[in-house]
Amino acid sequence: MPEGDTVYRTAVHLDEALRGRPLTVSDVRVPQFAAVDLRGEVVEEVVSRGKHLLTRVGAQSIHTHLKMEGSWHIYRHGTAWRRPAYQARIVLENTEWVTVGFDLGVVEVVDRDREDEVVGHLGPDLLGPDWNPEEAVRRLAAAGEREIDVALLDQRNLAGLGNEYVNELCFLRGVLPERPVSAVSDLPAVVALAHRLITANRDRVERTTTGDTRRGQQTWVYGREGRPCRRCGTRIRRGSLGASELTERVTYWCPRCQS
Image (cartoon, rainbow, N blue to C red; front, side, top):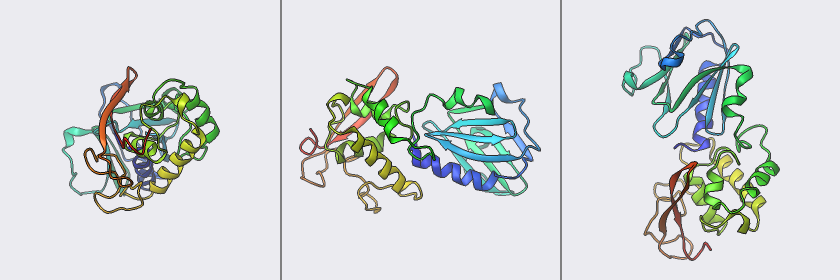
């Protein structure tokens, strides 16, 4: 699933293509909303909220989520699409641009005054203008005996972190992914580092937590099972954590640097 920085950049690019322009095509290819016609309506803005996207058009908001396979593409008119048309779940066009949402996990149209019904459950948005670290710490602390990895992935605590960031964050803080939140000594430092990491990467495609953007050098532990730790040389291990409300996730850690 894309991380919050990917969704943030998607919102920025869609906003540049759609903001302030009336729609000439409004094609929602989801049965429940297939009759929605927003042609002629002006797009006010496209914003990200954690891993969610809100395209605000007139009195409506188009709520989309990429999930695992989704992506938004932006084309000039007459340009061939890079994915097959049957994968398109929504098409929004104006006189200059064609935007297509492929294989989106969520597509729905709600009244603007009902946005909280679809994103109101989210915790503080790491890349949002209203980022609130104190509230994020409070929500994390309330997780108690849940594993820190699982609690950080729970978008109700703080919104925007995915599996890669969480694995890297646990390594950088020297914390085993399975350690209970109640046993993590400095939650404010964890939250502060999460904010610094994702903010540092929000404007670049090549994500890095090591500071090195070269291929194979971007991460400390994520995706490096069996390879030597960049700090101590111990082989990186791989496992899994999960709970009923979260899909089981793969974890990576250094058994020497993390405890």
